[in-house]
Length: 130
Image 1 (tube, rainbow, N blue to C red):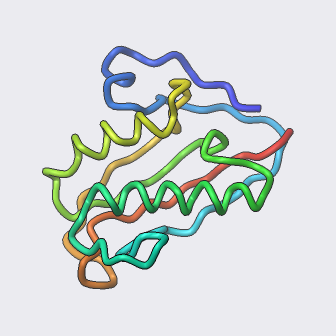
Image 2 (image 1 turned 90 degrees about the vertical axis):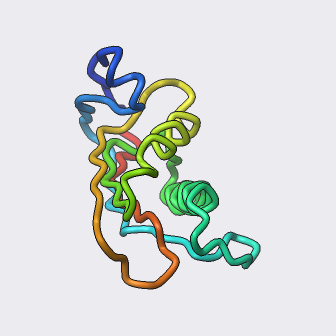
C-alpha cells in the first residue's frame, strides 16, 4: 500500500507527488523503456506522443505480469532529448494516473539515446502488493 504525500497546486499541475511512502509489498525495478515502434509494429520514430503512449502501455503490461499496474508505480525517471517536449509529457502523464496518485518523478533532458528516432525513455520503481 502506498501513501502519497499531499501535493501543492504546482505539483498537481505537473502531475507528480513530492514523495510516496510504501511498506511491505514487492519492489519491482523497471528497466528503461523506449519505443520506436508501436505495439502493432508501426514506426513511431520521431513521434513523441506515440512513444509516450506506447511506453506507458508497455510498462503497464510489464507490471501486470507482476500482479500490479501503472497504479503501483511509486517513482519514475524520465529522459527526453528536447525540453520542448516537457510540458506535453506532463500533460500526458496526468492522464495515466487519473486518481491523482502520481509517482514521484524526475524529468531530465539528455542529448542522445541509444538508437536514432528515440525521443523519450522512462524507468521506474513500483511496489506491488503488501
